[in-house]
Image 1 (cartoon, one colour):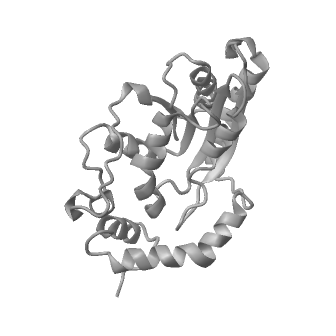
Image 2 (cartoon, one colour):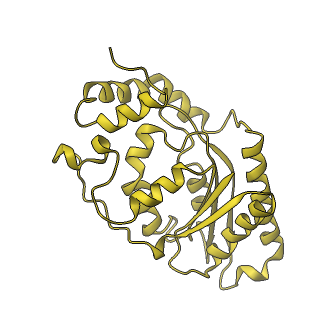
Image 3 (cartoon, helix red, strand yellow):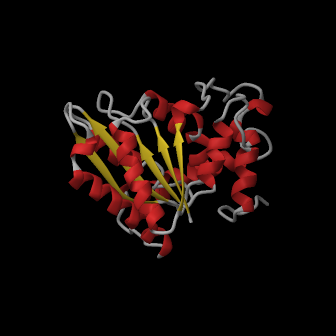
Length: 242
């Protein structure tokens, strides 16, 4: 069992990172193999908007981003994991720009189209001085759980308002994070299902969105959507076009 924590904070020892490490500690003590990814330690450029340009340069047609940075390495680490902790301080009621760029702009489109994070379990972690931590933590945890073809699961989230205090002065919250790590490993071990998570979104996808997504994939399976199509067929999530 592999659990990865993706840390979107610019501060390695900031409150959010410390809190996320408690979740990792709980997971490790429950027998999971754990890894920490501090995004600030990696080279991650901004998306250059390849869609509509050279087909051979598109992530949707090749399966990889053409920007020569660390994104393909990190993306694969998430794909190979069983559980993912997404942690970011709340800046203006949202996750950091570094985390948003990573999750949405750089890996989000291909990952969403292929449901590559399906069957994985997520925990969201955030801290703030004033407001927004709870919202950010919840949004991070549920970011990939609806899925166009197959869904993931949200184990839980922890958002904490700290003002100017340090998280180390909040032993009750640290204990909660530690227990969340144990819960994450149990969810993975016993394949716990959360049937009502994002139920409205899932119904809309099933009734309306999925048909449009499939039409786009099939119509462009030989060029723009080649990598998406081949990945989904190989994993048995869509039928081979006849």
